[in-house]
Image (cartoon, rainbow over all chains, first blue to last red; front, side, top):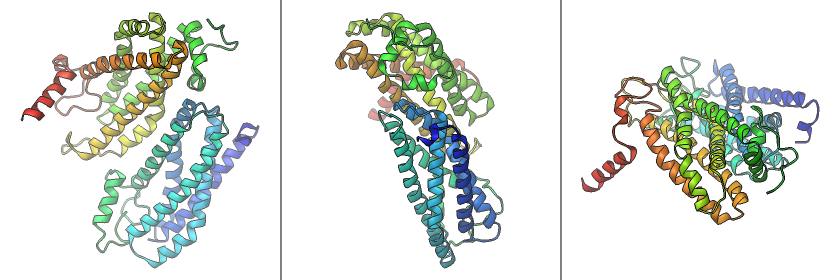
Length: 203
Length: 242
């Protein structure tokens, strides 16, 4: 938080975003090795873009919610903390990448690989949110209730983004889906089609 | 009466952070010494914040519904505030809070401004929900689960913003009344009145998202018949006695 209040904070924020994009591209390549082919470039693009767009969508509400909690952080500082969240998340995902790759080469079950990636994402997000909360605790916030509400919104937006940008693991004829769905309905469809479902099914 | 805080400056359009972070003492000073500036700031916040959210709500139906709902939502808030202005101004001193009519109007507007700023901040998230909802087609019904999820989410955000606005108002009323119990009574009375009138204003100005039986219009003539409470009563009566 101290660094974000110093001159040159813009460079720091840009660096964090750059690292986030690079790490999410790398993790995306690992995720894409499950299906191979076009997913080797489509999955990294979708994961990187999805993360950035999710953060951008949730940034205004993060600033307002934390202001209501009494936080003295300015918008640029909130943006910096969010960039820090993304950087920590994606660096942790790189740590999970070898595990994800081994499972990608071992199984053909889309549902299992999808669940595994979601677990890794969830763990990485939890650590990232711990960082964000620690940052706000140094901003004279009187209450973190608004921040905790925002966490729920952010998680739901990120989960929905995975469905909006499908398929990330499987294959499909188009880059983006033609049909709009909520993530719960999509997961239900994937599980119902699980008898014999493999990487050749679109996700 | 406490002397003005030395830096009790006017609120400017970029002062959203200052407004939201302000402690009850600062809010009180604005109501006492910068009332016109505060009221103008709140009205602009209501128009822009809830206007943006309303436009997102209506965008699922189409561009015209987005335009109409972008006007209707701020209108609901402003009409509710003005319609209950006299009542709220009378209830406050009756319940032990020494506010003038103009001060009570400013305080209620402040609460709604907080609600609107939150709605404005949530409008990108709301837009994402609307974008992910299957579009209006011949098979879409009011009972479709996707429409239900979108409706619940949009209403849920309004509820969340409403709670935040009320929670933020309570310390100010406590600071003014020097009594938490008086503040709670006044807040409850204002909320009850605003909910009662606001529900009917919403009923008259509907639809905000979609009416499958009507083309897109600002207000249909048939919406002036009946009331929200009559409809709820009739539905309950049918449910109990059917």
